[in-house]
Length: 418
Image (cartoon, rainbow, N blue to C red; front, side, top):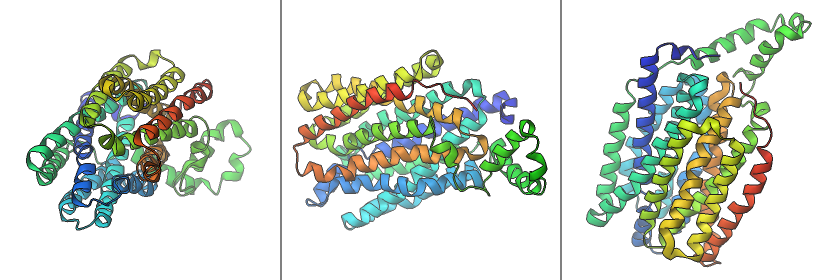
C-alpha cells in the first residue's frame, strides 16, 4: 500500500532531506566523543574501566529501545524524535559535572536513551513518508547521512580536545543539538502510520463482536485478522514477525556487526595512536558504499551484500591486529563492511514490518545494535585484562569472518515484501 503522505512529492522530498540531515547532525555529535571519551576517562580517573563507561551508552539504548518503539507507535514519530533531542539538552551539562566514573556511566545511559529515541523515530518516519519502491534507496541515503556524521565527528572531537580540552567538545555537541532541532522543524507531527494505529485499534474493538461470523469467510478475513493480531491493544510486541525470518536473522547479524564495532570504538584508541584517522576514513568509505547501495542496491542480492559485508569487517580487524602499520588499508576494508550491513539489513526489516507495528519491530531490530555495542564495550572489558589487545582484535576478526558463511546460507531464502 502506497503511503498517503507520498501524494505530495515536494513535501516528501523536504521531509526526506530533513530526516537525513538531522541524522547526519545527530550522529556527528554522538561520534565527537569516540576518540575523546576513552582518553578523557583515563586521564581523569586512571583506574576507571573505560569499557564500562563507554559501553554504558549502549546499555541505555538496549534497555529503553523497546519502550521507545512502543512510544513511537503510540505517540507518533516526531514527538519521540524531539524527545531524543530534548534529552540531549539535559545530558550535555552532566558530562562536565560528573564527579566520578559511576556518575559518568549514568550520563552515558541517558545519552543512549536520547539516541534510541532520535534514531528509531527518524528511521521509522522515513519509511512512513517514502513510497515502497524508493524505500531501499532512501534508507541507503539515510545510512549514508549517518556515516557522514561518523566521519566528521571523530575528527572534530579529536581536534577540539587536543587544542582546548573537554569543555569545548561539549560545547560543539550542544551547537549540533540545536541545529538538529532546527532541521527537524518541518517534519509532520502526524503520519499515515499514526492514523493506521488508531484506526486499527478502533476497528479491532468494533470487530470483536462479529469475529465468529468473519471466521466462516477465511479468504476475505485474512487481512483483517492479521491487522487484529498486530493491533497495539492485542500485543505489546509482534513476536510473530520479530521471531521469524527475515527479521530474526537480520537482527542477529546486525548484533554481530555491532559487537565488532563496539570493540573498535572502545579499544582501538588504546591499540593504535591514529584511531581518529581510522574512524574517519572507514566512515568515508562507508559513505561511498551507502551511496552506491542507494543508487543500485536493488540490483544486488542482499545475500551477497550482507555476507561479504561481515567478512570485510572481520578482515579489517584481523589486519589491525597483525599489521597495524597498514592502518589505512584496514580502515578501508572495514569501512566496506561497516557501510554495507546496516542499510541492507534495515531495508530487509522494513519490507517485513507491517505499518501499524513498524516502530516496535524497528526497536527490536535496532536493539541488535545496542546489545552488540554493549557487549563490544563493557562485555569485552574483562577479556582486555586477560589478552593483549592485538590478540583480542584477532579473535574478534575471526568471529566476523566465520559468521560470513552462516549469513550467506541464511539469506539464500526469498524475502517476502509487505
